[in-house]
Length: 375
Image 1 (cartoon, rainbow, N blue to C red):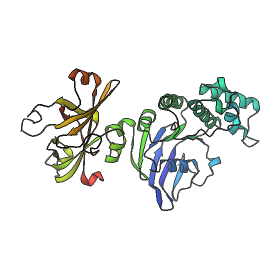
Image 2 (image 1 turned 180 degrees about the horizontal axis):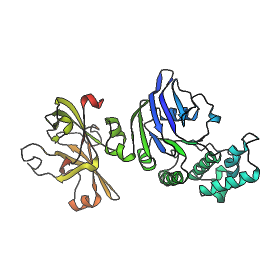
Image 3 (image 1 turned 120 degrees about the vertical axis):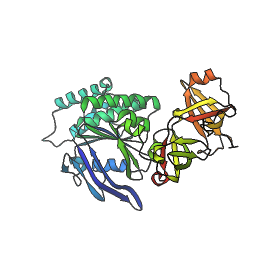
Image 4 (image 1 turned 60 degrees about the horizontal axis):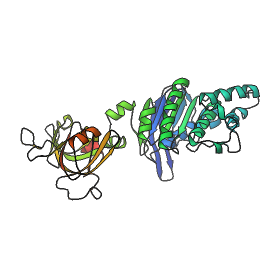
């Protein structure tokens, strides 16, 4: 079942939840709607489900206009964040509920229902707890039962709203892998809403980043990670350092004196520029006077004091305060504080200590000029 969303807008009072959203979802695709709270992603999901009606625009399922079709007739399965299981029913009865509610002419026999329910419970690897009640299950088990119940009516489209948001990190990670494997097996067109970047990048075939009711960017997880289309996407998909400066003659002249080559600055003449650098794209060295200059006498790196080092597992996270900034890391402006990541082994081999002066040099930066930056 393919889905075509055309020019959808939705307003609640003075709040514009969606602004002219258009999106095509291929049959069998697993899509993540990713964005911060209030960006419109859940509203879009509810409009696809038929739980909300757009003010403007249309929804088509495989070319058929379903904009005004009732939610019961759309053939969608819905999984909510908080399970929404019936507490007074056993696991078996929860999964069987949708089948037993079908009109008499479409309702399978109890024997068929039993066969279907046990098959689904086996699929979600919980056939051994069919006679238990939701209160006797863990959060991860409840969410898998909610998914089995949604699948029982053989939906054409599966919609998941923050399905793992209420679970702890370890269980969430396990269920993400499990959902991906399940989707590869069933190939039901699926859309899930999340504000968790890692979840979207790990699970989805395609990530749709939404900001203030508009689609900011869409693409494969690799595409949106490697080539963010805007400062918002860059900042939302993981940690990032922001350096400000001016662009001219193919170079960015940062406010701290350092310069970066940049094709974006080819035709710019003093335009305000913003360079985004991931923490793992910074080289870290000890500082010695004069070392931070290139062959032309220009600063090639940023001199900064190591304020704090967090070494957990294989990665060392370094918080650095640029030279000339007298604030401590706790009080430093978030734009002024530089975050770098290096292998923990390198940190130990270098014997770095808090309070030392270091030089950090960007290996790779994404530059946005002021007119494109939206800042």
